[in-house]
Amino acid sequence: MPPTRVVESGSNDEEARAQAHAWLDDVSLPPGATDAAPNAAALNSYTGWPCGPVAELEAFWLVPDATLRETAEWIDANPAGDLMSVWGEHRPESMNYDGMMLGFIPEVGAQEGIVYTLTTAPNGILVRAEVAAQTSDASCPELPEGELYGPPGMG
Image 1 (cartoon, rainbow, N blue to C red):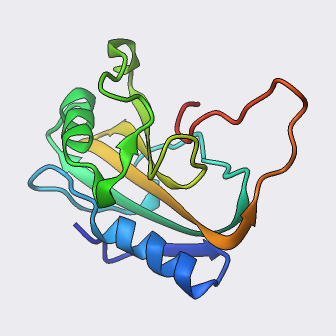
Image 2 (tube, rainbow, N blue to C red; image 1 turned 120 degrees about the horizontal axis):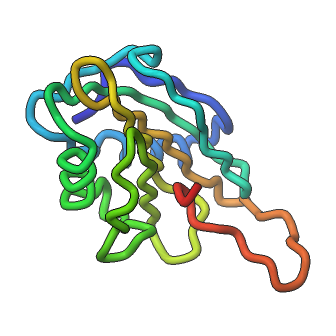
């Protein structure tokens, strides 16, 4: 369900931007989802992509009369662009609060893909998709020995 309103930032690399748009264009949300304004609900987090440069996109939808669980289960069952959940087969049940983040990546260890932020709104669930696609020359900053980057969307 491609959104009509997309915020673009980061690298202008054509290949990375095309990949980010392909992932965003393949997003599937529950029936009835509509474009939403970024201020339709309070969002108190954002995704920092540690490796780059990346082309970034951001889009918002409202899923009316839905619950967090229903919306998350839909996204889990309908991943965009053959991306895989950072949770694997089973997202923890304890994530059903008034908001949650769901990360999807192209391969294990990737620092690109889509992070969905779901939060309750007055009329349903607000969904924000933060999409990042790395350029061909992207790199990751060195980490101290024994430390690893966490998967996107894990907090």
